[in-house]
Image (cartoon, rainbow, N blue to C red; front, side):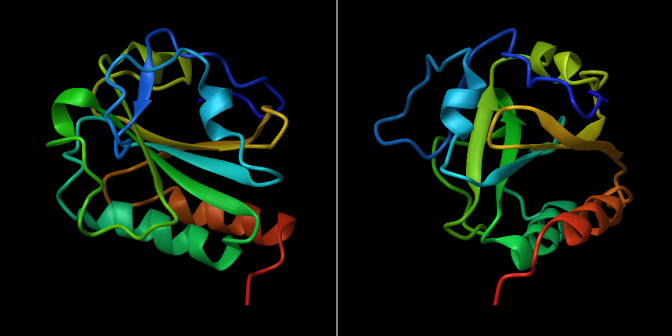
Length: 158
């Protein structure tokens, strides 16, 4: 995975907002411009080949681990274009999750994943530097490590 302290790399291929209205299927190669949201950190969850619109337990665990820190962290799920099932926000998700998609697995590789089935989380500071990263297993292993890191850094939201 990409090392903490590294500047978030621009994606190799464009990324776009899934729930944009109208859909921006051309996207941008400047990911930080999409992510910047005041002083919040962004927790990027690269979901590999999983289908976005199916409520996978690992997606829900990711969101649940981010939720206590919602004043400081915005959850972002990055999917593959052919796995998103439409340009709408998934029915299982709340309003606080940002959904992004890409047309290729090359972007995942630039963050240290294999571009196949691997999943991973990258916590990005507001200035664009990586604060934390870890691989995530199918069973959600790795998400607890992310939550523990955030608990040391942030105060839980009330």
